[in-house]
Image (tube, rainbow, N blue to C red):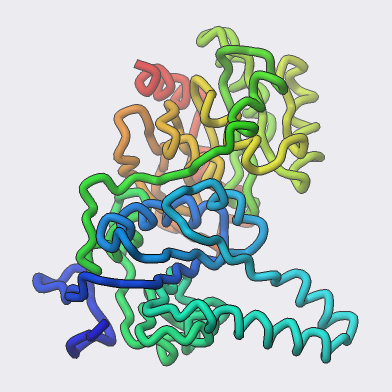
Length: 362
């Protein structure tokens, strides 16, 4: 691949976008290590790259937790798992020689694949080092920072406050000259996982709620989830399934205590089984979390509740809406200034959600 200067920074809002002119690429490495939501957002790039480079070998480097989201995608030739936690354990156990050997083998394995191009979607130092050690001649970084831009041969700036879901990856695809006419999130289930809802739930029709994520300022209030579930059951005539991971079990139990009719699946299903529960749901209500984004990916009627973050307002779906009440302090992201009141989330009322549910169900 030959990139004509200036290639170090390409603002996506400029009138002339510099486009890669090479039409034949043999080996491409996508790097997005985490988190689950971002892997979901970035998944349209797989098909976009495949359309542009049909004969290429396309690999994706990812951490173990998010790897299941990619394992069944037939457009990917390989999912490479970075054993981050295993290496961390070796470091903590002071097994430095073993760690050095594992590190050397991993780098050797990357280089043996002879990548022509590595695309670092994370833009951090921890992801850029693998683009560098892959041996790829061309290394493209998305919004690279923390000094990682020095390891790239080309950096593409992230979209600013563009309202489209996954806008930064959509913008990257445009900058690379990829076909974005059908740029949709692509999560593929195995046949076994796809059958999981029938075994686990037994209902043909049900609603899903996704109350949990990694930061408390992104949460809606526990007591409201119980009331909301009752209203969904009453007005939509649907049983309500609550989803979450092992870390959410205690909070899920508190919510379920307020409504004994909730089917509590928090911590009881693997990631792709949870994805299957979302795929076959009749509707979904959730906070800013990867599970909620999956609802949109699977074209499930979805209402997303945002407060401290607002990654998108344009869902690109007629049956998906974002509820977001912007305040002077929002989005605060990781630095709330409300002393735990989470006023922005508090402004989202149950009646507003139910009215929006009627719209997306229609």
